[in-house]
Amino acid sequence: MHRYPFTNSIWRQHDRGTLHPPLDTSESTEVVVIGAGIAGLVCAYELQKRGKQVTLLEALEIGHGTTGHTTAKCSVQHGMIYHKLIRHFNEEIARLYYEFNSEALTYLKSQIDEGFDCDYTTEHSYLYATEPNDELSKELDAYRRLEIDGGEATDEVQNTLPFPITQALVVRDQAQFHPVKYLRELAERFVKLGGKVYERTRATDVSQGPRPIVTTSSGRRVQANQVVITTHYPFNDLRGLYVSRFLVERSYIVACEMTSASLKGMYLSVDEKPRSFRSYEEDGKAYLLIGGEAHTAGQVTDTRSRYDRLESDAQHHFEVKRATYRWSSQDLITLDRIPYVGQMFKREPDIFVATGFLKWGMTNGIGAGILLADRLTGRPNRFSELVSPLRKTVKPTDVTSFISTNLDTAAQFTKGVVDRALERRGVQDLQLDEGGVVQIGNQTKGVYRDLDNHCHIVNLTCTHLGCTVKWNNAERSWDCPCHGSRFDAKGAVLEGPATKPLPYSERDDL
Ligand SMILES: Cc1cc2nc3c(=O)[nH]c(=O)nc-3n(C[C@H](O)[C@H](O)[C@H](O)COP(=O)(O)OP(=O)(O)OC[C@H]3O[C@@H](n4cnc5c(N)ncnc54)[C@H](O)[C@@H]3O)c2cc1C
Image: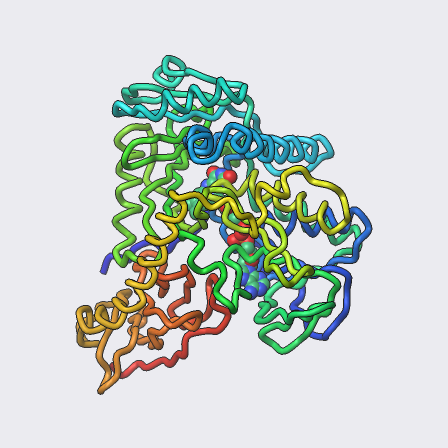
């Protein structure tokens, strides 16, 4: 039988496994940061550097989250955001967003000057269209108004990309890097400064009140003056204040070895089916990374075809070999496209959050880490209001998408029950390396039949808020269509907001 390749991010190919121990005692500290992605590590490192005593808790391993599965373009060119922000808010907000991200990039550049080793290269960042697109001209106008260093670049891109385009825009002197090397540099330097990192340590609860206590899945506790939630999707939103304020989008990347010269620059199309390109060189080999095929998280079972389409596009347009790496990940989009960074709840002054990076977390995440470090050390930060999660600037268009996000979630919640009936099949129909919803006796279960013919059986009810999880055939995972929680074939949590596994059993007699 043809075995569909298992997914693996190019950034995690040299993973050295867990470098830091799990937390096995309870302790007290000044600040607990939960989640060692780009936002959490920048925040923890900055706080420790400024003299705070910080404990960093990571559920899995450093680099296992979205930051280990990104394209790692470090750019302020976030699709066509600037004219949308001007239209939606005003020029001042658009300028602040631009400066928030520019300053993050400047911070990253200063770390490279200090000797951070993360395969950083300076690149121009391009947006292009292959079909007529009015929005690009509006974005060009926004560049002029905000004095962004860039502009029209149609000829430049036409001379580089191997297919016809209609228009292109550039932002000069942006960057790309190796995101996991960057996280490791941050972690190493954080520990040298006296910071503590615990991997394989999942936080399950944060108590309210002064000196909050973080509880972990193994029952350990860490008490701190302040707690920072950088878990991507906040897991501690028990009152549901955030669940309807995000869209969770999953997208796909393949990396193919190039047989021609490496691609210069970073590219994103604004077509109906967007594509993202950059290259990465390692051990004398150049890889083309091509991304796209996004969809709302948890809503697609046949995810293998998404990789196949990307690989086919790469082969059609570029001189490349078959894909060596393929991986996917998801990111959070807020209602007004601006991240949520700051105090998490009105009545909890000691709990902070950083999330909702719009698929642009390299600069937004760094900016968030710096802002929270400023906040917790009493330094003013002129972007606090812009990104405050408690901001009141929801406009009519936001309300529209707010409602539709809510309705989608609610629809999924009830549709899950119907889906079970629609998609249910006999367990004997499941082929090797296939998963699905099946009837076992009088129960409906999720089953994955592995390559050794063992059946891995899980309950289909997401342990977060009770939606019905769906099989994802490329990742071999159970994904929740409501809020993006994911579980492996044995029910273990791959990503939150869920913190508890799906009940699981194994049988080899089915
Ligand atoms: C396919 C794709 C391509 C992208 N490309 C780009 C790009 O080119 N440029 C760009 O700027 N952005 C890009 N992004 C967006 C960017 O990757 C993300 O915004 C960013 O990595 C998010 O960082 P984070 O620190 O919030 O989350 P993560 O990196 O996911 O870190 C969160 C960490 O928290 C841990 N965690 C979760 N729950 C718990 C818990 N309960 N207890 C303890 N730890 C926990 C997780 O294991 C994880 O390690 C892309 C996103 C996707 C999906």
